[in-house]
Each structure stands twice: as structure tokens, then as C-alpha cells.
Image: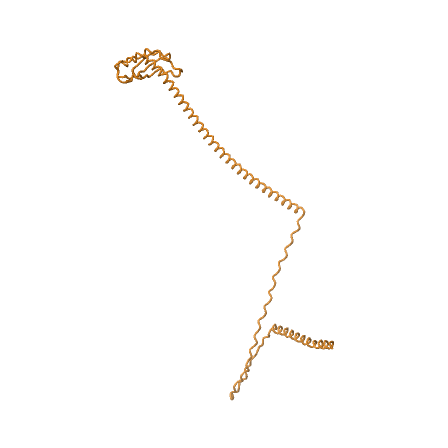
Length: 273
């Protein structure tokens, strides 16, 4: 029974399929006819109108009304004409193939160009390296100059300090020598004054402690060649007693060093000293 049902179903599908195919075919024919009718050019229709013969004068009948003219169908616009194609440019002639000599010449020129560019690159690199080296040397020279200048300032400061110290030492030594010389001279003068005072006979009626100053000129041997009173003590007897004692003390004591000898002496005397 199942086989009969399947057979009945297959037999019922065939009419439906045929009907669908007919409908589709009719639809396609209709579309083709419609497109063809729309693309067909409408032919113009011309209508000629004739006037009726003139009636007799006895009887005038109204002229028959002409039948209503139907409007001529509107002409469909012509489809645009296809534009003529632009002429294609003629193909340019192909250049002839380069010869072997031309290829070799071109390769040689390219090689020369590469060598020129390489040479220029190396020269530029060398210039840049020389520039950096010159800048480095300049910086080194600048630092060296700064170091030398600093060393020169330090050496100058040290020399100035040493000079100041030497001057101070020399001054101290000179002062010490002058002090020693002054002390030696003072000792030398005191010995002369002591010898002279041993010969002074002080007047008994002298009052106070007046001072008498004498300028004495002597020889290197100590012998006195001149005695002059520079300042009087105010007591003539005391001044004369001192003068006699100076002359009597000749020759005067000699210094321990010849450098301490003084030709001109200024000697001061007081009765109570």
C-alpha cells in the first residue's frame, strides 16, 4: 500500500510542474513582446482635409461637421546615437634592442658613477673625521692652556710667597743685624764714654744733672784730632772738664770689628750718670 501511495504522489506532481513551466514561458514571451513594442518607432500619420462642394444658391445646407480629429500619437524620442569611438593612437615604434657595446658602455658609466659617489662619500667622511679631530685637538689645547695658566698662577703665587718670605727673612736678618750692630756700637760708645768719664773732674758746686754734648773726630787708630762742644750743660766748668777728659782719653778704645768704626762721634755726658 505504501508503494501505491508513493506512485500516486509522483503522478500528481507532473501536471503542476508542466503548468508552472507554461506560465513562466508565457511571462517571458510577454516581456519580450513589451520590450520590442516599446522600442519600435511610431510612424507619423498624415490626415488630409477636403472642403465639401459649394451648395446651390437656392438651398443652403449646413456644412457637415467634420468628424473629430484624433490626436496624432506623440513621436517617441529617438534613442541616443552611439558615440563614435575615438581613434586609437598608433602604436609607437619599439626602440631597437641595445647592442653589446652600448650595454658595456652603460655598465662602465654606471661603474664610474658608483666609484665617483663612493669617492665623494669617503672624502666627506674624511672631512668629517678631520673636523672632529681638529675640534678634539682644539679642546685639548684649550684644556692644556687652562692647566698651564693655572700652574703659572700657582707658581707665581708660590714665587710671590717665597719672595715675601725671603724679604721678611732678609728684613728680619737686617733688623737683627742692625740691632746687633746698634748694640755693638752702643757698647763701643759706652766704652769710649767710660774711659772719658774716668778723666772728668766734676766741679763740686754743680747743681742737678746737666747734659753736655760733644762732636769728636778720630782716626782709625783711636787718636782724637778734633773736639767741638755741640750743646753746653750750662755749667762752663763742667763743659771744660769734659773737654779736657776727652783729649786726655786719646787714643780712644777701638771697636771689636772694623765695620763698627765711626770717624765722627757724638758723645753725651752727665755728671750723675
